[in-house]
Amino acid sequence: MDKTLFEKIWQHHLVQELDDGAALIYIDRVFLHERTGSIALKSLEADKRKVVSPEHVFCTMDHIVDTVIGRGDNTKVPSGKNFILATREACIDAKIKLFDVNDPQQGIVHVVSPELGIVQPGATLVCPDSHTCSQGALGALAWGIGSSEAEHALATKTLRVSKPKTMKVNFNGQLGFGVSAKDMILHLIGKYSAAGGAGYVIEFGGTAVDALDIEGRLTLCNMAVEFSAFTGLVAPDDKAIAYLKGREYAPTGALWQQAVAFWQSLYSDEHAQFDKTIEIDCADISPTITWGNSPQHACAVDSVVPFAPTDATQNQLKALNRAYEYMDLPAGSALKGLPIGAAFIGSCTNSRISDLRLAAKVLKGRKVAENVNAICVPGSTTVKRQAEAEGLDKIFIAAGFEWREAGCSMCFFAGGESFGYRQRVVTSTNRNFESRQGPETRSHLASPATVAACAIAGCIADVREYL
Image (cartoon, one colour):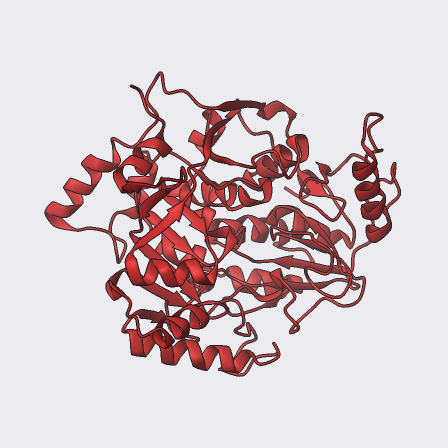
C-alpha cells in the first residue's frame, strides 16, 4: 500500500500500538531551552531518573536571555537569571550539550537545530516549544511538547502519541513579486482559519514549495501550529541534502552515503491517500499582513479590514468585534498608511540570514521613520556573525534599526522587554495574540521585507513599492 511521508516516518518509529488507540513512538532527538528545560531536567533528577541518551539531547538559552549587546546572565524577565543558572547547572549534571548565553553557536532552538544539522530527514525531534514544527522543513517529524512529556522523552526516548490525520497543502504556480513564504502561510491561515489544520499533520508541496529554499520552508512549517496542525513537513529533496552536507552534526563518510540513501526514500508515494487536500493558487497571494488578534486575521496589505461574513455565528461575531476593538480598527479601515510605532525583525519564523538579506535590500540607502522604534534580532549567533561578515548589520544600523544579539527577544512578552502599552507594531513573528509583545500591544504579522518597508514609511506599506 502506498504511504504518505508522515506514515513512513511514523512506521519507522513505532514502538508499540496501545490499547487506547494511541501509540508509543521512539524519539531520536530532544531539544530544550531555558524557559522549560530546567524544569524537565530538575524534575527528572528529583525522581531519581537519568537522561537515557544525553548525546541526543541539546539545550540552548533563547527565551529568557537578554538580546542587548554585552548581555550576561542578568535579564529583564522577573527571576530570569534563576532560570538561566538552573538550566546551566542541570545541563552540566546531565552531561548534555548546552549552547550557553555567549556560546558561539547559541541561538533560537529552531534556528540552531537546522543550521547545525541536529534535525535530519526522517528523524523524530521534540522540544517543549510549540514552534518545533518549523524543523519539519527538512523532512523530520518534529513537534512541540510540554515539560512533563519532555521529562518522559528524556528518561525513555519514547512518547505516547495519538496518531494525527494527514493533510496535503499544495501551493501551485509561482510566487508573485514581493511575495515570500511568510505571505504563503498567512494566506493559508487567513483563508482556512486558525483551526483549519486541527488534528492533522500537514505535508506542504506544490511547485512554489519546491522552489523555496530551506529557510523559506522553515518559515512555512514554523506556522503550521498557528493553523492548529500537529506539525508540518516538507519531503526532503536535493536542496535539503545539500543544505545538511558538512554541518556539524550531519553524518560523514560512509554514514553520509547511507543517510542520503535513506533520505531519498522519504516522500509520499504516488498513490498515497491523504485525509484532506488543499490547493492554493499562488496567483492569489499578495504581500500579506494581519489586522486582528489572531493569525487568521490576515489579508493583502493593500486591502481593507474585512467585514464580518453574513453567515457568521454569534461566537464568531463576538471574536471579530473583540478584534476590531482591541486593534482599534473598524471593518472597512484601510491598512496601507496606518501609522505604526515599532518594527521588529526576529523570531524563529523570520530571523535567518535570507530574511536579513531581504530586509537589508529594502533598507539600504533609506532611513527608518522618526516615530518608529526598529529592532533586529538575528536568530542565532551564527546568523549574526554571517550578517556582520556581509555588512548587513551596517545597513540595519545606518537605516536606524537597533542591532541585537541572538534570541527570542520581543517575540513574546514575559514580563521583560515590551514595545509599550497599546503600541502598534509590524513584526516578523508568528503570533499577534493580545499582549503578545507588551501590555495590550497591537501586533501586525508580516514578512521581514514588509516590516522593513513599514519601518521606513512609518506606517503599514506595500513592500513592492520598495523593491
